[in-house]
Image (cartoon, rainbow over all chains, first blue to last red):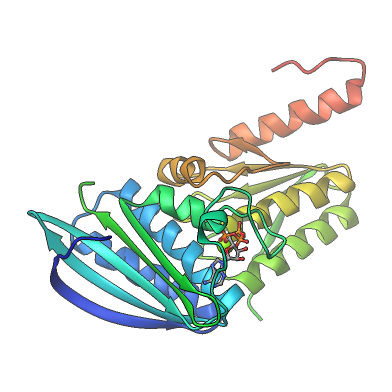
Length: 140
Length: 129
Ligand SMILES: Nc1ncnc2c1ncn2[C@@H]1O[C@H](COP(=O)(O)OP(=O)(O)OP(=O)(O)O)[C@@H](O)[C@H]1O
Ligand SMILES: [Mg+2]
Protein backbone atom coordinates (compact mmCIF):
# COMPACT_ATOMS: atom_id res chain seq x y z
CA UNK A 1 0.00 0.00 0.00
CA UNK A 2 1.42 3.38 -0.98
CA UNK A 3 1.81 5.63 2.04
CA UNK A 4 0.11 9.01 2.15
CA UNK A 5 1.94 12.11 1.04
CA UNK A 6 1.48 15.85 0.91
CA UNK A 7 0.03 17.00 -2.39
CA UNK A 8 1.86 20.00 -3.87
CA UNK A 9 0.21 20.13 -7.28
CA UNK A 10 -2.28 18.08 -9.21
CA UNK A 11 -3.70 17.99 -12.70
CA UNK A 12 -5.15 15.38 -14.98
CA UNK A 13 -4.95 14.39 -18.61
CA UNK A 14 -7.12 12.13 -20.70
CA UNK A 15 -5.49 9.47 -22.82
CA UNK A 16 -8.09 8.67 -25.42
CA UNK A 17 -6.10 8.25 -28.57
CA UNK A 18 -2.57 7.56 -29.67
CA UNK A 19 -1.84 11.25 -30.28
CA UNK A 20 -2.40 11.95 -26.58
CA UNK A 21 0.64 9.93 -25.53
CA UNK A 22 3.37 12.32 -26.68
CA UNK A 23 1.93 15.50 -25.06
CA UNK A 24 1.26 13.48 -21.91
CA UNK A 25 4.88 12.32 -21.74
CA UNK A 26 5.99 15.86 -22.38
CA UNK A 27 3.90 17.19 -19.51
CA UNK A 28 5.22 14.53 -17.11
CA UNK A 29 8.75 15.46 -18.12
CA UNK A 30 8.02 19.14 -17.43
CA UNK A 31 6.68 18.31 -13.98
CA UNK A 32 9.69 16.11 -13.23
CA UNK A 33 12.10 18.78 -14.40
CA UNK A 34 10.14 21.25 -12.24
CA UNK A 35 11.20 19.39 -9.10
CA UNK A 36 14.77 19.07 -10.38
CA UNK A 37 14.59 15.37 -11.00
CA UNK A 38 17.77 14.12 -12.65
CA UNK A 39 17.77 13.21 -16.34
CA UNK A 40 18.04 9.45 -15.86
CA UNK A 41 15.19 9.39 -13.34
CA UNK A 42 13.13 11.61 -15.67
CA UNK A 43 13.74 9.17 -18.49
CA UNK A 44 12.78 6.23 -16.26
CA UNK A 45 9.58 8.00 -15.28
CA UNK A 46 8.43 9.07 -18.74
CA UNK A 47 9.22 5.65 -20.17
CA UNK A 48 7.14 3.94 -17.47
CA UNK A 49 4.40 6.53 -18.05
CA UNK A 50 4.45 5.85 -21.76
CA UNK A 51 4.08 2.09 -21.23
CA UNK A 52 1.12 2.51 -18.87
CA UNK A 53 -0.58 5.04 -21.14
CA UNK A 54 -0.19 2.68 -24.08
CA UNK A 55 -1.66 -0.19 -22.09
CA UNK A 56 -4.72 1.94 -21.26
CA UNK A 57 -5.18 2.69 -24.95
CA UNK A 58 -4.55 -0.84 -26.15
CA UNK A 59 -6.55 -2.77 -23.59
CA UNK A 60 -9.08 -0.34 -22.13
CA UNK A 61 -9.87 2.18 -24.91
CA UNK A 62 -8.12 4.86 -22.91
CA UNK A 63 -8.48 6.40 -19.52
CA UNK A 64 -7.38 9.24 -17.35
CA UNK A 65 -4.12 10.05 -15.58
CA UNK A 66 -3.66 12.16 -12.48
CA UNK A 67 -0.30 13.89 -12.48
CA UNK A 68 0.75 14.94 -9.00
CA UNK A 69 3.73 16.56 -7.40
CA UNK A 70 4.02 15.15 -3.89
CA UNK A 71 6.17 15.42 -0.82
CA UNK A 72 6.83 12.74 1.79
CA UNK A 73 9.48 12.71 4.50
CA UNK A 74 11.20 15.73 2.96
CA UNK A 75 11.41 14.14 -0.51
CA UNK A 76 9.61 15.48 -3.56
CA UNK A 77 8.41 13.25 -6.28
CA UNK A 78 5.96 12.74 -9.11
CA UNK A 79 3.01 10.44 -8.62
CA UNK A 80 0.99 9.27 -11.62
CA UNK A 81 -2.35 7.51 -11.25
CA UNK A 82 -3.68 5.77 -14.32
CA UNK A 83 -7.35 4.87 -14.19
CA UNK A 84 -9.38 3.12 -16.83
CA UNK A 85 -12.74 1.42 -17.06
CA UNK A 86 -11.60 -1.34 -19.34
CA UNK A 87 -11.99 -5.11 -18.96
CA UNK A 88 -9.57 -5.30 -16.04
CA UNK A 89 -6.84 -7.87 -15.52
CA UNK A 90 -7.78 -11.34 -14.35
CA UNK A 91 -4.46 -12.34 -12.87
CA UNK A 92 -2.42 -9.28 -11.93
CA UNK A 93 0.50 -11.40 -10.73
CA UNK A 94 0.72 -13.04 -14.13
CA UNK A 95 0.38 -9.73 -15.99
CA UNK A 96 3.40 -8.46 -14.05
CA UNK A 97 5.61 -11.29 -15.28
CA UNK A 98 8.16 -10.53 -17.96
CA UNK A 99 6.98 -11.85 -21.29
CA UNK A 100 3.29 -12.22 -20.42
CA UNK A 101 1.02 -10.62 -22.99
CA UNK A 102 -2.52 -11.19 -24.16
CA UNK A 103 -1.90 -8.74 -27.00
CA UNK A 104 0.68 -10.79 -28.88
CA UNK A 105 3.30 -8.35 -27.72
CA UNK A 106 6.57 -8.60 -25.78
CA UNK A 107 4.98 -8.27 -22.36
CA UNK A 108 7.57 -5.79 -21.10
CA UNK A 109 5.24 -2.88 -20.32
CA UNK A 110 4.00 -3.66 -16.81
CA UNK A 111 7.07 -5.40 -15.37
CA UNK A 112 9.35 -2.88 -17.06
CA UNK A 113 7.37 0.09 -15.75
CA UNK A 114 7.55 -1.41 -12.28
CA UNK A 115 11.34 -1.64 -12.48
CA UNK A 116 11.60 1.98 -13.61
CA UNK A 117 9.88 3.58 -10.63
CA UNK A 118 10.33 3.72 -6.86
CA UNK A 119 6.79 2.71 -5.98
CA UNK A 120 4.26 0.79 -8.01
CA UNK A 121 0.76 -0.27 -7.15
CA UNK A 122 -1.83 -1.93 -9.34
CA UNK A 123 -5.45 -2.74 -8.62
CA UNK A 124 -7.76 -4.35 -11.10
CA UNK A 125 -11.20 -5.77 -11.07
CA UNK A 126 -12.35 -7.83 -14.04
CA UNK A 127 -15.22 -6.06 -15.75
CA UNK A 128 -14.63 -2.81 -13.89
CA UNK A 129 -11.23 -1.52 -14.81
CA UNK A 130 -7.64 -1.08 -13.79
CA UNK A 131 -5.74 1.53 -11.85
CA UNK A 132 -1.98 1.79 -11.65
CA UNK A 133 -0.14 4.23 -9.40
CA UNK A 134 3.56 4.96 -9.71
CA UNK A 135 5.93 7.28 -7.86
CA UNK A 136 9.37 8.41 -8.86
CA UNK A 137 11.22 10.53 -6.28
CA UNK A 138 13.40 13.39 -7.46
CA UNK A 139 16.43 11.88 -5.75
CA UNK A 140 15.25 8.30 -5.52
CA UNK B 1 1.12 14.61 -44.34
CA UNK B 2 4.16 14.76 -42.11
CA UNK B 3 7.04 12.45 -43.05
CA UNK B 4 10.59 11.96 -41.91
CA UNK B 5 13.08 12.65 -44.72
CA UNK B 6 15.40 9.86 -45.82
CA UNK B 7 18.84 10.93 -47.01
CA UNK B 8 20.83 8.83 -49.43
CA UNK B 9 24.57 8.65 -48.72
CA UNK B 10 26.24 6.39 -51.24
CA UNK B 11 25.17 2.86 -50.46
CA UNK B 12 23.59 3.90 -47.17
CA UNK B 13 20.40 5.61 -46.10
CA UNK B 14 20.36 8.07 -43.22
CA UNK B 15 17.37 9.22 -41.23
CA UNK B 16 17.58 11.65 -38.39
CA UNK B 17 14.73 11.48 -35.94
CA UNK B 18 14.25 14.99 -34.58
CA UNK B 19 10.84 14.76 -33.03
CA UNK B 20 8.92 12.48 -30.75
CA UNK B 21 7.61 9.82 -33.08
CA UNK B 22 3.97 9.20 -32.72
CA UNK B 23 2.83 5.83 -33.88
CA UNK B 24 1.59 6.60 -37.41
CA UNK B 25 4.77 8.50 -38.24
CA UNK B 26 6.95 5.68 -36.94
CA UNK B 27 5.07 3.09 -38.98
CA UNK B 28 5.31 5.26 -42.11
CA UNK B 29 9.03 5.68 -41.54
CA UNK B 30 9.56 1.93 -41.31
CA UNK B 31 7.65 1.38 -44.56
CA UNK B 32 9.39 4.28 -46.35
CA UNK B 33 12.83 3.10 -45.30
CA UNK B 34 12.38 -0.41 -46.53
CA UNK B 35 10.82 0.78 -49.80
CA UNK B 36 13.67 3.24 -50.40
CA UNK B 37 16.30 0.68 -49.46
CA UNK B 38 14.96 -1.88 -51.89
CA UNK B 39 14.54 0.73 -54.68
CA UNK B 40 18.07 2.10 -54.30
CA UNK B 41 19.75 -1.16 -53.42
CA UNK B 42 21.05 0.42 -50.24
CA UNK B 43 23.14 -1.93 -48.13
CA UNK B 44 22.78 -0.14 -44.84
CA UNK B 45 20.41 2.05 -42.85
CA UNK B 46 21.55 4.56 -40.24
CA UNK B 47 18.96 5.85 -37.81
CA UNK B 48 20.20 8.81 -35.81
CA UNK B 49 18.23 9.04 -32.56
CA UNK B 50 20.49 11.50 -30.74
CA UNK B 51 17.56 13.93 -30.44
CA UNK B 52 15.19 11.29 -29.06
CA UNK B 53 14.71 11.40 -25.31
CA UNK B 54 12.50 8.37 -24.89
CA UNK B 55 12.42 4.91 -26.43
CA UNK B 56 9.52 2.89 -25.07
CA UNK B 57 8.48 -0.62 -26.09
CA UNK B 58 6.55 0.74 -29.08
CA UNK B 59 9.53 2.65 -30.43
CA UNK B 60 11.86 -0.27 -29.66
CA UNK B 61 9.61 -2.55 -31.64
CA UNK B 62 9.63 -0.14 -34.61
CA UNK B 63 13.43 -0.10 -34.60
CA UNK B 64 13.62 -3.90 -34.40
CA UNK B 65 11.06 -4.22 -37.19
CA UNK B 66 13.07 -1.92 -39.43
CA UNK B 67 16.11 -4.08 -38.73
CA UNK B 68 14.24 -7.28 -39.51
CA UNK B 69 12.68 -5.94 -42.72
CA UNK B 70 16.00 -4.50 -43.88
CA UNK B 71 17.66 -7.89 -43.37
CA UNK B 72 15.18 -9.40 -45.82
CA UNK B 73 16.57 -7.14 -48.54
CA UNK B 74 20.16 -7.73 -47.40
CA UNK B 75 20.63 -4.42 -45.63
CA UNK B 76 21.93 -3.88 -42.11
CA UNK B 77 20.51 -1.32 -39.67
CA UNK B 78 22.50 0.73 -37.20
CA UNK B 79 20.92 2.98 -34.59
CA UNK B 80 23.33 5.78 -33.75
CA UNK B 81 23.64 8.41 -31.04
CA UNK B 82 21.37 6.91 -28.41
CA UNK B 83 21.43 9.16 -25.35
CA UNK B 84 23.01 7.46 -22.31
CA UNK B 85 19.87 7.96 -20.21
CA UNK B 86 17.80 6.28 -22.93
CA UNK B 87 20.23 3.36 -23.17
CA UNK B 88 20.19 2.82 -19.38
CA UNK B 89 16.39 2.98 -19.36
CA UNK B 90 16.08 0.40 -22.14
CA UNK B 91 18.18 -2.06 -20.15
CA UNK B 92 16.08 -1.51 -17.03
CA UNK B 93 12.84 -1.77 -19.01
CA UNK B 94 14.09 -5.10 -20.32
CA UNK B 95 13.51 -4.35 -23.97
CA UNK B 96 15.74 -6.26 -26.36
CA UNK B 97 16.68 -4.36 -29.52
CA UNK B 98 16.86 -7.40 -31.76
CA UNK B 99 18.13 -7.23 -35.31
CA UNK B 100 19.83 -3.86 -35.09
CA UNK B 101 23.32 -2.68 -34.32
CA UNK B 102 24.18 0.41 -32.30
CA UNK B 103 27.01 2.88 -32.64
CA UNK B 104 28.01 6.07 -30.85
CA UNK B 105 27.64 8.40 -33.82
CA UNK B 106 27.06 8.51 -37.58
CA UNK B 107 30.76 8.13 -38.48
CA UNK B 108 31.16 5.07 -36.27
CA UNK B 109 27.89 3.71 -37.60
CA UNK B 110 29.10 4.04 -41.18
CA UNK B 111 32.35 2.31 -40.29
CA UNK B 112 30.39 -0.51 -38.69
CA UNK B 113 28.18 -0.87 -41.77
CA UNK B 114 31.22 -0.96 -44.06
CA UNK B 115 32.80 -3.71 -41.99
CA UNK B 116 29.53 -5.68 -42.00
CA UNK B 117 29.24 -5.41 -45.77
CA UNK B 118 32.89 -6.35 -46.23
CA UNK B 119 32.28 -9.31 -43.90
CA UNK B 120 29.33 -10.49 -45.99
CA UNK B 121 31.26 -10.04 -49.26
CA UNK B 122 34.20 -11.99 -47.81
CA UNK B 123 31.79 -14.82 -46.91
CA UNK B 124 34.53 -17.22 -45.71
CA UNK B 125 35.94 -14.56 -43.38
CA UNK B 126 34.80 -15.09 -39.81
CA UNK B 127 33.48 -12.07 -37.95
CA UNK B 128 36.29 -9.87 -36.81
CA UNK B 129 34.99 -7.69 -34.00
N1 LIG C 1 -5.01 -1.20 -18.53
C1 LIG C 1 -5.18 -2.53 -18.77
N2 LIG C 1 -6.40 -3.07 -18.87
C2 LIG C 1 -6.55 -4.40 -19.11
N3 LIG C 1 -5.53 -5.26 -19.27
C3 LIG C 1 -4.28 -4.77 -19.18
C4 LIG C 1 -4.02 -3.39 -18.93
N4 LIG C 1 -2.69 -3.22 -18.88
C5 LIG C 1 -2.14 -4.41 -19.09
N5 LIG C 1 -3.08 -5.37 -19.26
C6 LIG C 1 -2.87 -6.82 -19.46
O1 LIG C 1 -1.59 -7.15 -18.94
C7 LIG C 1 -0.78 -7.75 -19.96
C8 LIG C 1 0.66 -7.38 -19.77
O2 LIG C 1 0.83 -5.98 -20.03
P1 LIG C 1 2.26 -5.48 -20.52
O3 LIG C 1 2.21 -4.02 -20.75
O4 LIG C 1 3.29 -6.01 -19.57
O5 LIG C 1 2.47 -6.26 -21.88
P2 LIG C 1 1.84 -5.96 -23.31
O6 LIG C 1 1.17 -4.63 -23.34
O7 LIG C 1 1.02 -7.15 -23.67
O8 LIG C 1 3.13 -5.93 -24.21
P3 LIG C 1 4.14 -4.70 -24.41
O9 LIG C 1 3.87 -3.72 -23.32
O10 LIG C 1 5.49 -5.32 -24.30
O11 LIG C 1 3.83 -4.17 -25.75
C9 LIG C 1 -1.39 -7.29 -21.26
O12 LIG C 1 -1.12 -8.17 -22.31
C10 LIG C 1 -2.90 -7.23 -20.90
O13 LIG C 1 -3.46 -8.51 -20.96
MG1 LIG D 1 2.10 -2.91 -22.64
